[in-house]
Length: 253
Image 1: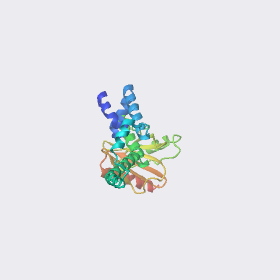
Image 2: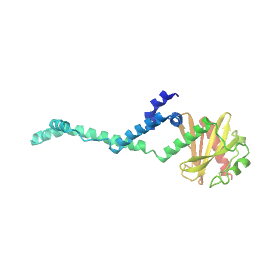
Image 3: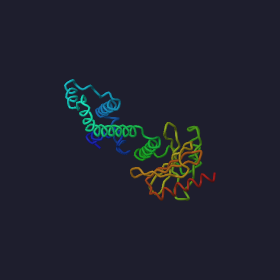
Image 4: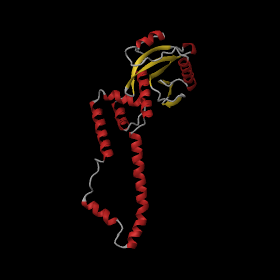
């Protein structure tokens, strides 16, 4: 993308509406373009002012007078009731709109922990492909990859050999997700890499659950002591076969 293309994406970037690939393109451009960084900060400032109410202002006296003059005359009981009948549906509709907007903004600007982790996993997978950095230690030997993690993590990730099932190990690396270091084991099926993220915990479902995201598939599960997330562009059936093979090997340990 050129500079003009990036500028057109900035409003969606600020509002977090871009997909993972486009967002990464914008972030790379921002690293070298001071003008676009300034524009992003300006747009974020306006957004923050609107959300906090700082952009609100008192209406000028003439405007207030015109609004008040347009309201029904409440001095007469009949006039007041008639005016209330006219204005009540409008007020109700306005209140519903305000509540809907408020709920939508709060839901959008406060993504769930699961959604945030999904976005981190997908972004990490895409980065590993774009910069060709799949492995810090490149080896198909699990006895080479497993010791490499010693001293780099506060846990020992299980390094599984599923080459007989058609998923050879090609290496491992460190990554950072949800505020902690995680292990990544890298496998391959034909020309399709698979990133298997592993970290301690049991907050994933016991039964593997699949999420689809812009052409990529994510399968997450937990064995009760470790969380696992496998990400690839493999077809559902192939990735399910990989997950089944990994879970089978882990259960036999």
